[in-house]
Image (cartoon, rainbow, N blue to C red):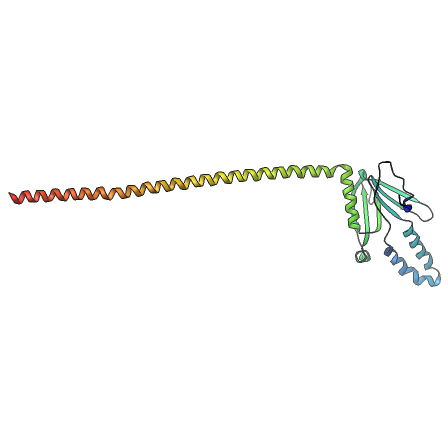
Length: 220
């Protein structure tokens, strides 16, 4: 374990995932107020308190929970297990947005307001996402979401297969319909071609009969 984490007592199967201290730039407001007042000795305690608080504050994320150590003259260690975390959020002020630090707030089930705050940590969004992932892994909701996603993928694949099969059947039916229409058109053409020939034969036969009758009449 790192020397600055000698205050942390872990279980046998517990490991440190992330640790950090407040960003050094977080004491800029205290310096802005304290340095001008240091001329009259009033600002010195302000600057000293901000510096000592920065040096003695530490945040830790382990495989089982969250830790926060603070205190200048005394040591205060707070722990929140992942099974108690209800909500995690982060925020950044003007200076924090410019420099890259902010607060990560952790609320617990049954608690009122914020139970733990990682103040002025670097990349607060990434820290909040890390805590959320660990909470899901600890409570099993992450595995449940993965299982639901797998089932959904199977359903989508099955629906695509059914759609492909239906489109194939439709294409086959359309082809059969076109073939039937082509056969019907050929039959009609054949009938149309045969009908004029028969009519012409009947007309020629009638004409021949008329000419025969006329010849017989003239002979008499």
